[in-house]
Image (cartoon, rainbow, N blue to C red; front, side, top):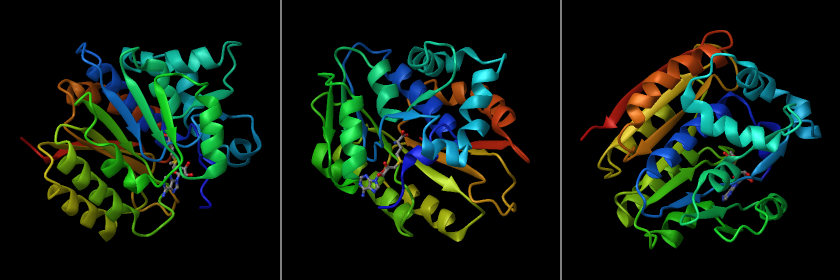
Length: 279
Ligand SMILES: C[S@@+](CC[C@H](N)C(=O)[O-])C[C@H]1O[C@@H](n2cnc3c(N)ncnc32)[C@H](O)[C@@H]1O
């Protein structure tokens, strides 16, 4: 396990993934009934952008730093920015929330936050960062076991983020398998898989095909590019595939994505959204 998210925290992929996550939480919160947030590969929860790892790559300068300076932010980014503001009370951008911290800060008293991280050191930092919040449980185990271990949840409503590091060649396949298991164990789960886009690869095409046989009632795909696909960059963009997207999400993304593509585009920004499984 070489991957450490601290090198990448707040980059364009994080901004995209995390804004969508905040919208999933907001849309799920329209109903009073509690829900669980589950993070299979949770990371540290909180990142210091002035720390050694973030400083070495400077990836956040093309991500959250751009959003922080934007003067035309859509209201749909308010929840996301609210959390970042609370972490940076001096007005200067220094701390960046990972998915666990966003969920912890935005979820209600009746909800639960179930986090899993395998890296022992990062897992301990995650525990510390969650500040003994009684709604939060941190597991230090294998992320691929999470759907089987935790689903179905007692609440019968869940948002799950499947966000592995993509260090291993088979991780797209593992994601598709995790989606299948998730739907098999709790059909109504709102599960979001994040994946990197480097080029128009055969592996991605196979991934999409496998997802179409996941058994999910509905599956929305949304992708954000910061370079064109033929650019020899390590990360030209990223995508999210979301099962059972809450009503209203597609419309919100139609507002958010053009703005994000314009904000985060480097040599060439772009986005697309379609249904891998329509109702
Ligand atoms: C992309 S990062 C997660 C970022 C986080 N979800 C966020 O959005 O803030 C992936 C994390 O998965 C952890 N990891 C790697 N292999 C894992 C495994 N097999 N099971 C669980 N966690 C794993 C890494 O240590 C890393 O912290």
